[in-house]
Length: 434
Picture (cartoon, rainbow, N blue to C red):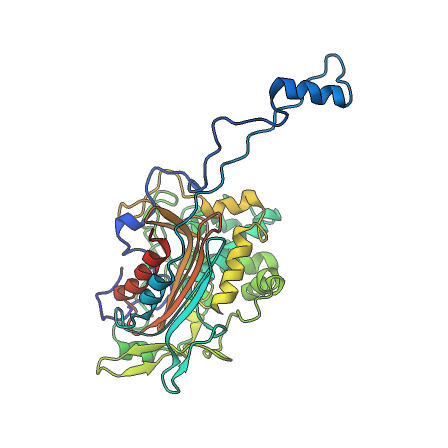
């Protein structure tokens, strides 16, 4: 649930659905299969060889066909080129980014790439104390965008036949969840159809006020402690029957990576994604609450009206699902490689763009999560990607499947609540307006 405007988050974990408050018109329309934003194959078209006469000429010019041999299958017609997107409206993007009052934001940046246009812009400052403007290589906390990295490694392991996505999670992690819990597949975790119980409030800190958040900013959590918060019954729904965004699903997936690889899940992400792609400014902080090197600061508005620099924050509460740090440039590089099939074989990559059949969100709206990615449609343009947030930080990375347009958005809202959606919607409108 999204708190009322001005109220801080009441959950300790990073498992918040930033699209839950999106207007219905911006969500993926129901009844459309995965990947339908790609152009359909034409119903007809000219075949290679120009028909029977052209084919006869080609046969005579080449090796004679043996009697009784079957003719070669016809070459399928080429797909139609993708419909062009509206030209990039730089003035609209600049205006959307420059409004730092709705919501209250201390700094923002947008990087747009793709074949339909490129632009990078900033507004506000990276550091209020010094007044330093945001630099293109400044790092920031990316929150739940971490989940896309975790999902990518899980799908890589599936492509290597080291796990079966539809097999029970309990096969690999037999003693982690209560034995009374039903069978949970890896797919149920990837696309948020697990139905796990809500987190217990027993032992969880009180984060109902900004002061409470600040007081608990250095609390240390283990993944086993996070799992224990949902290790009670009953299940919210039968696994696979509904969809509900939950951060704990990816805590379990990160533990599965560690079980299968024998190494910390962050090391698996680094060796399989960060190092091969040259993402030198992307990291997993682990138990280090600081951000090192040039970075954007995050701030939180306190009850007395003052602003607290909330940059330093122990991210173990977001272990496996929301702890990573990156830049707009690194995230664009990752998104390009992911959508291009560099990181995953095409059949496995398709899982990311596949919505569960016959399943709706718990609020009755259409399902919008594949295996690691979420989808949203605005002004007739469908994007796939992921949003993320931590205290003092909000971000999103999105792209059309054909990569005509990719965008990475990052800003520093002073309230972690529904108001921060205003910035995301303004930028999305500027990216898609015709």
